[in-house]
Image (cartoon, rainbow, N blue to C red):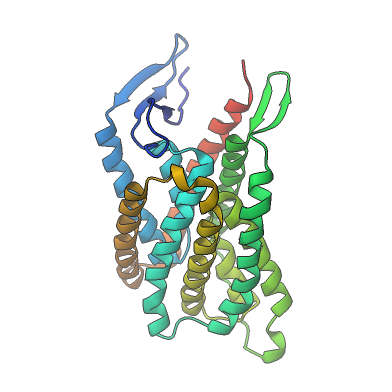
Amino acid sequence: MYIFALPKVTHNSAPAAQHHRIRHEFPILWPAGGPVIFFITPSTMEIVGYIIAIAIGVSLGMIGGGGSILTIPLLVYIFGVDPVLATLYSLFIVGSTSLIGGIPKYIQGLVHLKTALWFGIPSIFSVLLTRAFISPAIPQQILRIGNFHLTKPVFLMLLFSSLMIGASLSMIKGERVKVPRRKKSDYKITLIILEGVLVGLLTGLVGAGGGFLIIPALIMFGRLPMKTAVGTSLIIIAANSTIGFLGGLAHHRNEIDWKFMIILTLLAISGIFIGHRISKKWDGEKLKKNFGRIILVLGIAILLNEGIKIIKW
């Protein structure tokens, strides 16, 4: 019997900031007699990782979201970054990329500032509170009952994988959100604020920009057309991610490998321009559904992989 498994990462002894300098062991097939290990050199894995970094920007450019859904697995499973630190890296990478992608949208008049403020301000406060109080308050050892061990890194990855699965299902379902006729009385400020708080909580906890939640909310509650919702979403993601990064910087300042993080960010930024071009030529709904299928498989794999870690044999 053969079982597919996610990469097993073995850290070398190195300074805290060099998290990505690791050896990767890939137990791809596990026969009854034991795992078959395929060793892949760090240089090969770095190339794969850099390609995925470009895909982060492509995703943001095509559908206005999904960047963090790729960023966290990239950092944790390809570059071996600790999940807690990976959320901080993700905020910087996705935030910077979204800002660069959002500027042309603003110039084109595809950013609705009023909605961005109503959504963004509560979301920013939510991010700040989460990074300053909620995230640091989560203990490293959350629960231990017999062989059941739930640590903070595993909890964050379980939460993130659940988020991935939920996001992927909404992408695959692919129902277009209809924009009702715009009336001042229909502008649902309370719901926009509540959705902003929820997205801020997710951004602060797992480093997710929340584009898959923001865009439907902007369309349904803010009555924005799809293209304007995408542009507005990028600005909100940029603001949330920037505040979240600054809020967590004090706790992890000495652990950050700035050179590594900036390289990934520049690659993602190059990808967002590719994504913009693709979105003009290809059917956005088809792209979204195919991307959703990939994320669903990845989310389930991460959920299973992290679930196994809970049980200490």
